[in-house]
Length: 204
Image (cartoon, rainbow, N blue to C red; front, side, top):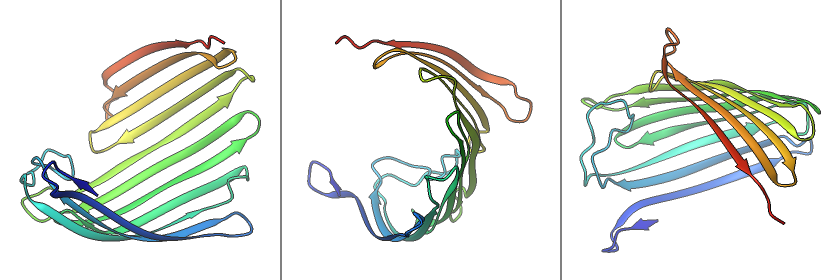
């Protein structure tokens, strides 16, 4: 719970869940929750540039969800979660998951996805938001690692590329070289790009 300086309630979240871990290390869970929010400023719940809910309005909604995860010790494993319920003055259905394949000792390949279907009454925007992308982690040696991911986001019409090379040249001491690029998905026209170099060294 969150309160303002006058001790008036502004936010509250309550959740009850139950999880089961099977002998084969599979996990399942179910949960139910309740949320209360009082807006301190105008807010568009879809962040798509539509009409905003006015400041001072308060909203309360309930949702239920379930999740499943397979044995993470195995080379191939997956996790998935889904929920449905209210969302401000409307409704939202969500589905997220990760599909992962690990090839030891060289690295892993994963596909990550999140989908939110938000339905709000007029004049507020409804939206179907998708975030999806593969991620690759590769180990060259005990001290040299490469990580990359590509992420598509239809909410802001963006394709993000991130490449990171990590060299551990001494204990707890690393050199990072990171390249980031954002572009339009339709024609791959570049919005922005950047190159960053970070050096950390542990003085013992």
